[in-house]
Length: 90
Image 1 (cartoon, one colour):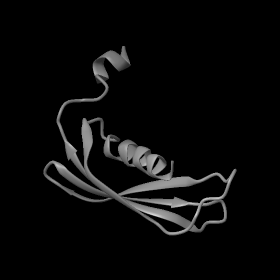
Image 2 (cartoon, one colour; image 1 turned 45 degrees about the horizontal axis):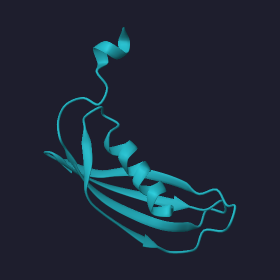
Image 3 (cartoon, rainbow, N blue to C red; image 1 turned 30 degrees about the horizontal axis):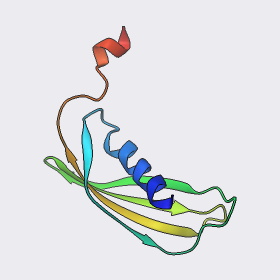
């Protein structure tokens, strides 16, 4: 579940420019356990991009601010829009 949370944040960050993008590679390091009933937060940041590739880091934190996991992903753009702006603005 923690990987899924981080991967979802990664997907939102990768696709935030409305260009179809997918994960090329991803890994995660688990640093501390999540607690039952605890709300976890994922914060995704683009570390850099060049051409069609982008590198992202996602930090998953617990309610007390401790780092539960660090996810690193490499993205690849496929081209094309996710949302057709003309249809969306009509």
